[in-house]
Image 1 (cartoon, rainbow, N blue to C red):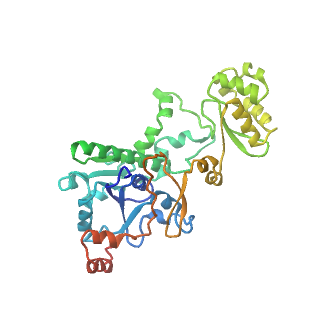
Image 2: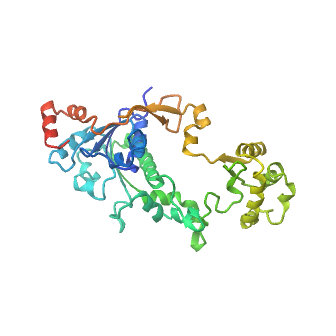
Image 3: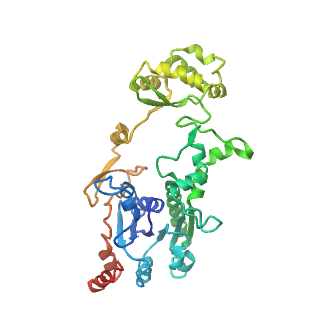
Length: 393
């Protein structure tokens, strides 16, 4: 069966993570995504590292199933090529520097008269206006501005997330807004402008700590990998030097934990620990008791005790552990995609459906589709050769 977005064409002026993550998910659903890249260099994320058989880890993650068209956007003939592309496009996504797309005539207002059905999604660090509009906005900087870093880490030192959460948040909101705009266009026949900022995406994710600190109240303390306000809820060492994660949510679970896991049922009514608030206040003393009990078991033994007691738990997996995760393997969540360096494993996108399979095509080499795309726009071999000789492509 046809995938949901088959027949939809997306043109994207993108780099790094937020916009590529948005458009890769549109490609997963069957959209044709034409990625415009700088000749000879391409998306600068191609050069972030060489960890995947010489290719960059960020790039292979966010760019499968796309067509790469090299085009110097400053070349005099670039505007004509872009105009022809947009004549057949449904969506334009861009995360260029603030104002850059507008200077090239690619704002929604400039495009809408000629392309009334075109959806234009602009992704930026801080949005299209306001005093921060022109500030540089890398992922770590947005994690900081949004308050995320102030709530993450240990009491002695803040920490950022280990992956690009601000980019991911913006990419997800861009993706969902584009899907909504396509539905809306089905009713109205008209495209619309979408303005997604990384800051606003991350501040939305910070809703709990913000409301916890409402009206001047203290914000949640930094608690490492533990929960900031519930205890025991977080990592604990085991006798074999590994770490397990557990989480208690209520008094019933606390009583079961004391009886079935710690083997100390009387601890449940110890006045130091007999309410959630008291356990949180007496973290150090309670942690010492749990660590002593867990030291008698390896990680597998502790997890077995927690499972038998119905206490939520998890292993603290490394990346190598995740690649080999038995649940992902059992559910058949791995496939392969092609790359210029050969096939690599890839996780199927979340949201399994029996009706259709996600698109999982190759990660493109730089400019791999330039000639074919230009030919489809009416450029013959001589014209393409001239553009290449002139370094326009």
